[in-house]
Image (cartoon, rainbow over all chains, first blue to last red; front, top):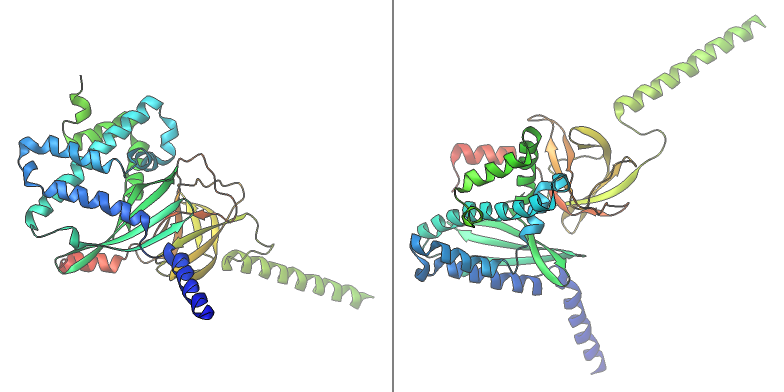
Length: 210
Length: 146
């Protein structure tokens, strides 16, 4: 009986120590946000161009809890972050966030329009790898008979795990934009980069403020 | 006496020749003669695509070190980079595996970050990017993606 208890405890302890590789609490919290965001995007109550702004506000209200736009924006600028003023840093974070929203939400909208049967069940979370204050959550998106790897990189900020980067098929969002912004800043100024980001997104929420 | 002098000169020539050979071997075989100077950082990649020991580590095309060791760890490639001691690598730097030319040798390119935290010896570069598979990309472009 005593030996049996030892074996059960050892198995439980073994599961605890291997939890760093399988999906855990960080994944569970992230999944709630991703599922909620997808739910809002598919909600027919927000269909139509007149509801777009309201819908995007709802998406931000959910996604902002988990996505650290400031950390993401800072990392895309790399060493150039310290070259700009605090006011410019604040401006860049807003412009970059708007840029991402307008670039990717429209793409996801188009995809959901073409794949009406896509649901949260098409997203599976396979692994959670924690390394100190960093965690990577590996997920796969099943669509058109193939699986696309989408990984989230999170950082621990005072006990709150927030997303600062995404990789799709091995290509990182931060790495991609850091390279591009580095090239743009090499041949232009910070203002030039801001104008480029604004021009790709059209009229921004920032510009509409009085 | 004359013979001893001649033998001495021949001996000196042989030593000089061996030293020259050693210098050329070191330079072109890319081997370090006087131990490993600098410090080491770790980078873990899901795939290194043929990166070899001794490969260059560069920032902006400038050599800052070499790959010292490659090993498999949890089915990922753990790469030890030996870097020049005066080079500072920020915590949010990105280590990418790139190719010199279209079919050239693989090397590690480090894209500097903006963090105030500088990595110290033995620490890990968290952000890594595996090499782009050119053949797969061309294949997807030519034949289309399913």
